[in-house]
Amino acid sequence: MTPAVLYARVSSREQQQEGYSIEAQVKLLRSYAAKSGMEIVHEFIDIESAKAAGRKAFGEMLSFLRHSRNCSTVLVEKTDRLSRNFEDEVSLNRLDLEIHFVKTGTVLSKNARAQTKFMHGIELVSSKYYSDNLREEVMKGMHEKAAQGILPAKAPFGYRNNKANRTIEAHPENSVIVKRLFALYTSGAHTLSTLAKTIHRETGKKLSKNGVHLILQNYFYVGLMTWGGKQYPGTHELFITPQTFNEVQAVLAGHNRPKYAKREIALRGLMNCAYDGCMLTGDVQKEKYVYYRCTGHRGKCDLPRFREEDIINRLGEPLKNLQVPTEIVSQIVDRLRDDQRRARGKVSQERTFLESRLTSIRNRMDKAYSDKLDGKIAEDFWERLMTEWRMEEQQVKMAIQGFTSGETGDRALDAQKIFELANSAYYLYVSRNPVEKAKLLRMVVSNFSVDAVNVCPTYRKPFDMIVKRAQKEEWSGREDSNLRPPGPEPGALPDCATPRNLLR
Image (cartoon, rainbow, N blue to C red; front, side):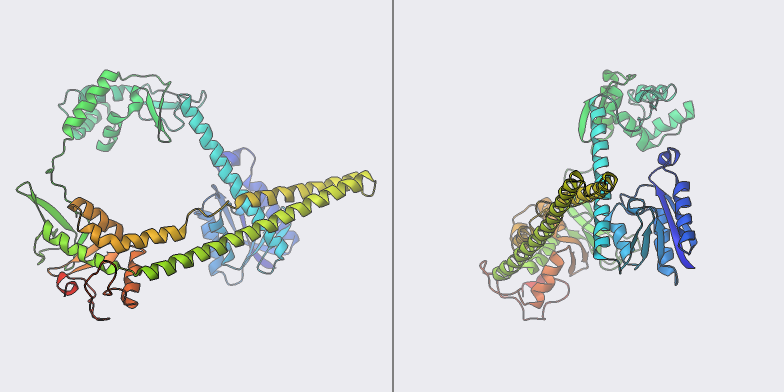
């Protein structure tokens, strides 16, 4: 007997209770296995959505099939029970499986006919479209509910969701705790920590410091709710007055005044110590000078302290390595534009093929209708044909809709902007203040490894490739329109950029 695994799924426990039964799927698949001479060696059951990758039992099934020596057959009710996303489809294709979609009688494998694979692709696109459209409709309904003044989510502490009336009402016990929180905090005698401890002592309710802070800042308690980035007036009952809420905000603002110096630590989080790998931190001295030092979390460190003015100049030197000749930029951008034109042509061909197939289906439908009127085919036979063709017509129409009208972005234009930034990075850098310099560095470099003499940058993509290509193709050091001084001989650049070596 052929070994096989069984996979069944429903989207939620509510579906399970409403008749989309796992038991019905399992019964169907077991019956099919018995009739087909198959032995089910393992059953995998999921009760979660398939619109995104990450289902537990599905992942376990893939792992089982990946390590199994003699089992490569999967039994499932239909396509949308197995997957509604392309990532899972790719994972299945990598395993060279034979998948039996029992309800439709389709067997999908590497050797399946092109027509079978095509129709499976259409069904997968249709399933994904269904999931995306359902999500869109649900979000639309939630926004409408918010516009009506009802929060379409779990009620905040002090309120509860009334599932019977689909409204939000005050919680009889927790609302009293919220009122007590606001009343105590208006006095100004409590910090968030002492307030949480006081509430726990008085009511037995344990709240975190962060939880208390969120409650005191939540405008829901004065009738305003935020949903989808917009603010709506709520229809829920209020037990906190606007005056009390405003008093609490004033106390919060007073307790949270900045305790740091006015001078910003621009390079914080951007440098690591080359000796022990610890982060470099910054300190403000005499309220105006910034010094950077190793945090020393792994013990005493030999890295000296650096003045911000000195280290920031050293960090800018590696930006000189990003220079790319104008003719090279033009070649890359032109090549990308050619690739985009070819990609658009391929999409156009696919769309033309589907539109041709749609025309063919409709012509068959028209001819069959004429044959029925002429008495050449029976009514029941015509109805069966029309049912199949309408389904195929709908699937092809949805596949056509799945094609975008064009690319989501202009890769050639994006590349051109990146090269423009690379070529002008150093000259922009030297003209900026420390905060702006740090912002520019973070766009190009993820971090620097710093020792007493050298700074070694870790470039972000795609700037890392630009640096490698620049060194390999001897781009750096050539004279360009900015008349930079000639660089060192090829191969003479050190791995880590230092002011002494770069300016030699």
